[in-house]
Amino acid sequence: MSANTSLAQDKATVLKVWAAVGGTKQALTNGSDDVSSWKGITVWNGRVTNIDWHESKPPLSGVISKEIGKLSELTWLGLWDNALSGEIPKEIGNCKKLLMCFLNGNNLTGVIPKEIGNCTALTQLRLDQNELSGVLPSTIGNLKSVTQICLFNNQLSGSLPPSICDLPNLQAIFTYNNNFSGSLPPALGNLSNLTTIQIGDNLHTGSLPTSITTLKKLTEFKIMGNDFSHTKIPAAFEEMHWRLGADFVTDWNKNELYLNDAKKAIDSIKDMEVRGKVTSLQEDLFNHVKNRDTAKADKVFKELKEIAKKQTERLGSTTATVLNYYRFRDNGHRYREIERIEEIPAVKQMAVLGETAAERVKVLLAKANWKETEFQKRMMNEIVDPMNQASSIRDLCETYGIDSSSYVYDKFGNTVELIDPLFAFGDGTASNVLVKERFGPPKGYQRALAKEEEGITKSGADKWIGLRDLNRVTFEFEDPLMLTLACNALMKKFKVSGLKNKFENVHVETYDQPPDIHMNLDLGKGWLVEVQLMFASVLTIKKELHKFYDVVRAEKPRAILSPLFKVAQTNEAVKDEEIERMRKMMESAEVAHKMNHRRESGTASAWGEGAGERIKELETKVEKLESKISRSIEVLEE
Image (tube, rainbow, N blue to C red; front, side):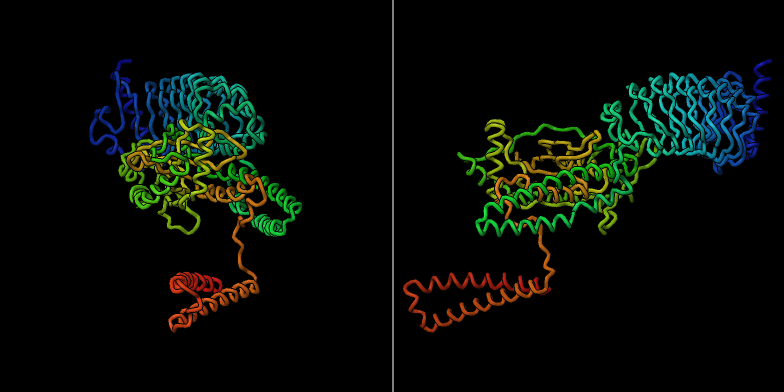
């Protein structure tokens, strides 16, 4: 048969296939008789090799004709993202030179024909996002050259055939959101080139084959939404879990409060019953210390420390639950970049004059006070406001000169939205708020001195990096992606003099310290400030934890006499009593004024020499007291 005869036959076949998918001859040929010029057709060596009719406008809405099997030299079949219906014809198996088969994004029904196994040259098979049913034929194991199999978002059922493990070049398999059931093939570990396994949202059961742990090229392993028999990550998978981080997504990442119940964990951060008990015990402790009853004070002190220990353990576990909520709320898509933030070694705070630690701390605190206004202004103008005013991720990246290639599109080529409703602040904040700021109060002298002396003792005077948190801010986020972008923005706007990524990239059941991105920035001329990037709920946990840390660290009862928690004024009698006490203080203040009037009348001579100056000092104190008492009465009466 001559080449011209073969091309003529291919030409007639293409016309039949085009008609079957619902196209008009004019739309295909545009009046030309030259098949090589037709829409989406490629001719090579006198034969039709490519059909590319993807995303046709209007979408093709017919069926795939069995005539397709007559195109024996076909290497590319691209019909994705149309509205085709009907079944995949078994005659497709006659296209034995087919390299690329893209039938995804249609309305195809029926089964995957076993004849697909005859297409042994296939490198990519995409049948995803259709309405296919039935089992995956065992002949899939004949596709020795295939690198990617996409079957997700169908209605396929049955077990994955063991022959799928006989594909030496397979790199990615996507079967999620089907009805596949049964155990996974034990020999999955034979697929040494596999980089991606996404088989979530099926009905798989049994144990996971440990052979999977030998897949050293694996970068994604997502099997959530199945019914595997494991209740926690098997020991054999720990190394792989550590290696993959957020891309290791299984049902075992859940504890009993994971995802749907995570909000309960968040609501339980502040245990009001425990708070009440602690407050009551602290009141008892105060009275025992006041009465010098050492035995009773020590007993209450011990009980408080036991409660604090249990609460730190509870909150550490809650931290793991809440962090998983951020990790996997969207299957880890917006979280994955956090674990890739690289750490930067810390450098020392600027040197200041002072022979002793006390002298240096006083100078540092004074410096911090002078710098606070500049610090807050720059954080707001250069980070908070631009982020909250951004219109898109691309816009945000352009503002800071960040390479947007890792953020604007996901791995499937879909545009990533700036605001994801899954990660909106849940406190009534405007939906466009991506970051909130919380500037830390000035550090007290005693606390700063204690930290300075402790650092020198532990590290040595030469290695101690100094107090770098005298100006500090915590940036609060709900969206993991925004936390990552904020970190990149800070690195673009400031010289980073230390960065520690405290987000664990392995599954842990508890945390000693709430995870965050901890940064030290050079505000200018070597003055270092502290910035922490943290999730909103984790920040709430941190505040609660610090209360109990105070008790855990306390060495003597006197160290925790002040109330850890604010006591609500709910008893009207107590409130009225306090108001009455305030009014009596006001009356005392009025008496002082009358004394002043008597002094001016010449009746204060009995006060002796210098009485005028002392009375003026008293007047100043009384005026301040009046103002303070008036505000207190207003608050109590409200």
